[in-house]
Image (tube, rainbow, N blue to C red; front, side, top):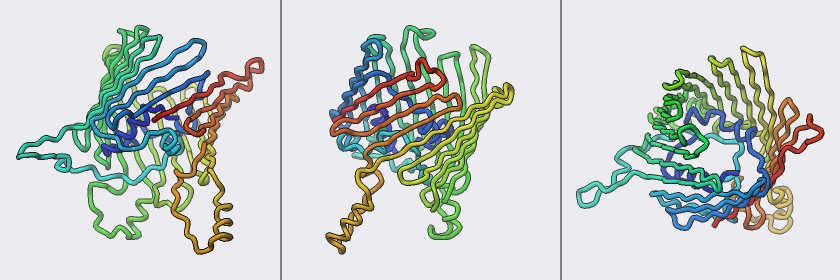
Length: 394
């Protein structure tokens, strides 16, 4: 389940019209959500609040051997009007699951952001500030995010920890999203790492108005799916080492009439790693995913399978039967898939019989995550971890 502060940051991206999925770093986001979910350890309680549309706080207390916790603060110059009460949140917004990618959005024009008063420009660029301190380790995390233009943003994240080299690290990302393609330039103080990565989307260019009507068969055919290709190149100036990776993705879009699915293929030629994933939304309540990793040099391979099963509050068949019996002429209001979700069960297993189970949902005013990880080959200690996490936000 998303941390409260992560959820607030996503709301900032949506309010500032930034597409998180149009990035090479998000190429495998669907597979990671279905296969790489973390099961809680021990007992953890989080209490959060959006005290004002521009300010949020969060307090976390946990018990895994020793009592630990964290205190977080977030400031957004852009008012966030979405309700963050745990009793009102749509679970689809806070639970990582199968990601339905939407059609590419045309970037805002620069003059749309201009605000004039008395012949002077008074507009400001939206900014987000975030900080978290972990206790009793005294580890500090910080984030500075600033929208520089409709197609560009600067993201600087830092970690201060005495156990790290030089006492911490800073990572700077300059991100550009032009709709049709995106680029990122990065620099990290750890090994003086520099890198560049990009993603290109084939098909319709959202910046160009279609010459044919939107209901044209040709346009509809193109919007059924999207094929994307990207690459990443980085080099460490201090350790004199670098790396390269490339990837492909095909995903269906909302106009697709069949089951939504996403396929990806990524490769690191220097390390010899090849990874392929396939995720499908097999029904309204079921999503399946598989990932196969292979190394050309060592011939080692790994297979992982995962699924998620969503639970609805009431059966549509029962509601339809009741409607016909009581008021045949009554038309039920349209209910989105977010409105009747009560929880989700996630599971993943690999070839070494390591299993992860996670149940996420809501009990009255509390959001909860209950999970465990198992290792069936270790009979003396099958349960590797068991935990529960509770979240309350207002």
